[in-house]
Length: 306
Ligand code: 3HC
Image 1 (cartoon, rainbow, N blue to C red):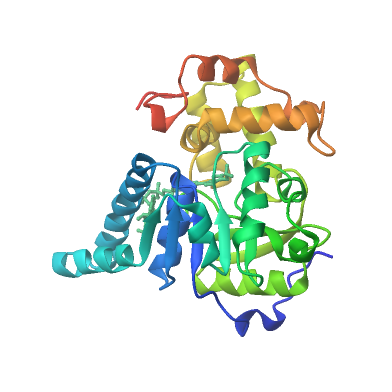
Image 2 (cartoon, rainbow, N blue to C red):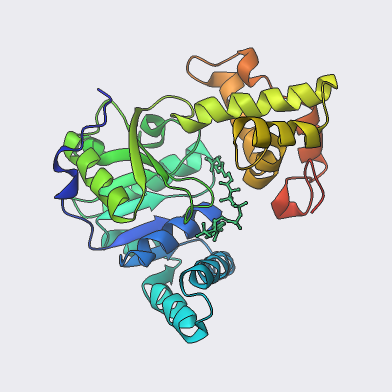
């Protein structure tokens, strides 16, 4: 069942060592946030290049946080950045990083086969009590964890963060039919310990936020395609009329158009309760932007130029 029971969350044990797989925006943000709250973190990616890119995101974001926290005090700012960085160890060795962790958070590429294989390996090498969590935004947790052995199925869950991770308060904890209450309590305690607001939901496409957000973003694109209003005016309308911090086109560019296209295509094809639905109908306009390499802020252009 889904609910917001706070029960043992506050007293549940936290984690001695956390391993984050994937040094992209999300993985780096998760590693940074956990390390900021004194956790020891192993950040794993496939190459040194990927790891140094991830570390680059972390340093940039930490400097931003440090500037806010310690206004005008540069020595204190750099002490803060160095201190947090000292708790993040970089590694290209998934197996040894997983072997010493009691919480493993996967934030790698959104490919079901790749994730499945990784979870199969994690199940074999992680300590018996370790929780295996995925930060996927659109794939079913149950399917990702198919290769996880029966013994650990109760310790498999979704742990979904939002971009930018250090700033966004929400974490969705996603329970499969097998996830135990203890696992949920431990994850909830963890989320609270890094100053996040955890919510609990079932393993359905998009969980809570993306289930509502993605159809909204898709409808904004259709509105533009129909010529109802300009992107600028739709953005202004949602910011000033609905209090959103970003309009839908700013948010599309921020999240990445390839990511949104991937989610729409996947759900339209086989999302539980969504396949074939107009809510998630792929968009010509979006496909064309992605085809032309206009992926949003990260590529320098999307609906807007940067
Ligand atoms: N790292 C650390 N801190 C950051 C940051 C980053 N990358 N980006 C912004 N911040 C912090 C700033 O330091 C500032 O902190 P303060 O409140 O302590 O002063 C605060 O965020 C506000 O930043 P700015 O003043 O520079 O800019 P904005 O007020 O425009 O806020 C924003 C930026 C937080 C990104 C805001 O525009 C926002 O909330 N946008 C919506 C983001 C959103 O909806 N994210 C969810 C996307 S969906 C998703 O992630 C799911 C995925 O699965 C697809």
